[in-house]
Image (cartoon, rainbow, N blue to C red; front, side, top):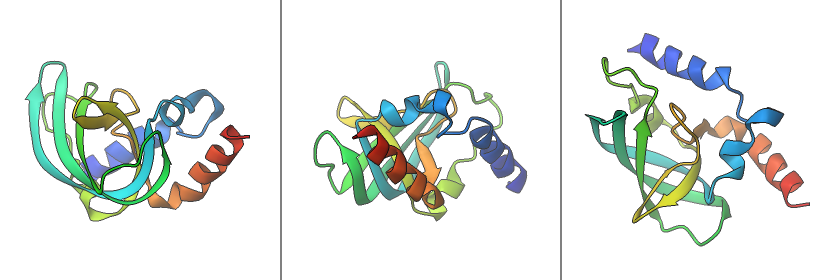
Length: 136
């Protein structure tokens, strides 16, 4: 279990979110919130694994509209192998920063492939600095 979490974190770390060439995840987000997710389902789907959950919003850093207190979240992990299933349970353990795009009645990751739109809350300062720089 811990090995899968480490591999997932290494994948996230291998593509730095705030490197100049990687601003697309942040820039393409319709809303950037802090909150905690509760996964409700996870199943294989055409093109990858579908992960569904609900994010309880703690705060809003950026949004095109006021986010509701609970946001339904859908993510298709198109780069995840078909077996074993992706280990996403660790994201439920801590509050994080979520980069989301509106997708019908729910929201999805502003990232692609294996990027669920989640970053650790420890990166909050970097996100705020990037948002301030973008709004200048």
